Image (cartoon, rainbow, N blue to C red; front, side, top):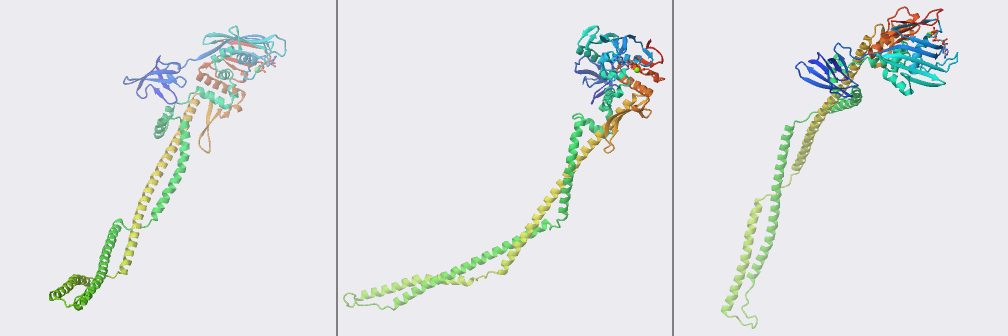
Length: 571
Ligand SMILES: Nc1ncnc2c1ncn2[C@@H]1O[C@H](COP(=O)(O)OP(=O)(O)OP(=O)(O)O)[C@@H](O)[C@H]1O
Ligand SMILES: [Mg+2]
C-alpha cells in the first residue's frame, strides 16, 4: 500500500518533500509500532517506526481509513411507553408521521434505550407503560455493521433488566461490551440525535471535534513560523516537550531578570569607583624615584658607617696611649730611682769593704738592670709615638642631625611610592573586576534574551498551531462558524473555548429549524471525521422546510394533524 504522508507530533515524512519518492507500510511492525519504508529519490531507503497511537498516515488517492457504517433494518417494540406492539422497518429514509402524542419520538427513544438504557439526551429512562398493564417491556433491533447483522434486545420483566445478543440471553456487561466495541457512546448519540452534541459541556464538545480533526503536526506549524523561531524550536523539541520548555524558560527568565538587575548594579558601582579613582603617577617614574632614594639611603648609610669606625678608632687609640703612658712613666720612675741608688761597697754580713772585682760586679749588675728597664720602656715609647701619629691623622666626625632627618624624609617618600604602587594594583584589580562584571552582565543578558526568545517562539507556535487547527476545523464546516480559542486581552495568550455559531448567532439563539440544520451539519462533520456512519433521527422534522440530508439513514418524525401513526419506508 502506497502512502502519501506519515506523521506524529514531531516527525513527518511526505512524498514529494525532502526528496522522498515513496512511502510504504511494511509487515515488520508489531501491535505498538508500525514500520514504514521511506524511499528517497536517490533510491536510498529508510525504515521509520511510528508508535501506533501517535501515527497517522494518508494514502495516495485511496480513502484513508475504513468507514464503519451502521444500518438499521428492523425495530420491534413491545409495551414501550405508549407502544404496545410496533414493528418498524427502516430504509434509507424512514418517515414517521402522526398527530401529537402518537408515539413518534418514542420510536427514536426506544433505540437509544435499547442501546444505553437512557433517553435521547442520555438521561435514565424507565419506559414501562403507565397507562396499561404489561408483563414486560421489550425493544429489539436488527442492524447491520458493514453488512454484518447484529440483533440486540433489551427487556424489563418484573422490574428486572434482560439483555439479548443475537437472541442469546446475555449479561449486562457482555451486552454493553458488544455495543462499546462497535462505536463510542457519545459519538453515536451525537450522530443519531442532531441536538445531542449541543447538550454536552463545551469542553466535551471541543474535545470531540478536535479528537477527530487531528492537530497539525509540529512540522507543519514550524513551516509557518519565522525561520529563527522554527529553527530554534525544532531543535529544542527533540529533547523536551513544549510544555516543559515553557516551564524551564519561565523559571530561567525570572531568575535571569533578577540576576541581570544585580549584575547591572555591580557594573555600575565598579564603573563609578573607576571614575573616582583619580590620576596615578606612572609606574616608570615611581620606579626611577624609588631607585634614586634607595641609592641615597645606601650612600648615607655607607657614609655613617665610616665615621663610626673612625670615631671608634680614635677612642681606642686614646685609651691605648693612656695605658702606654702609665707603663712608660712607671718604667721611667724605676729607671731614675735605680740610677740614683748608690752601690753599697761593704759586705752585708761582715761590714768589710768588698774586693774590687766584687765591687765591679755590683756596678755591672746595676748597669744591666738599668738597660733592662730601658729595653722595656723604649718599645712602649715607640709604640705610643706611632699611635700618636695615627691619632693625629684621624679626625673625630660629629653625627649630623640634618642628615638623620633627610633619611626620615627619604623613608617617608619610599612609603608614599609604595602606597602609589599599591594603588596601581588596586586599579588593576578594579579594571579586572569591572571587565568580569561587564562580561557576566552580558552572559546573563544573553541567557535572559534566549529564554524570552524561546517563550515568544512558543507563544507564536501555540498561536500558529491554534490558527492552523482552527482553520482546519473551520474548513470542515460550510455554514457553521467554530471558535476554538479566545485571546486573553491582558496577556495576548490563547485560551481554549468552544463556540458554534450559524449566521453570526450562537446555537442557543437559533430557531427550532435552524437548530436542526446546525445539528445536521455538525453531525455530518463528526461522522465524516470519525468515519462512522449511523442513522440519524430528525425529530419534529415538520418544522423545517428544506435541509441537507445526513450521510446515513434518515429517520424523520413529522407531525401531521389528525393522523394516526404511520411509518413509511423509502429507498
Ligand atoms: N411510560 C409511559 N407509558 C405510557 N405512555 C407514555 C409513557 N411515557 C410517555 N407516554 C405517552 O406516550 C405518548 C407518545 O409520546 P411521544 O412523545 O412519543 O409522542 P409524539 O408523537 O412524539 O408527540 P409530539 O408530536 O407531541 O412530539 C404521549 O402521550 C406520552 O404522554
Ligand atoms: Mg415528539
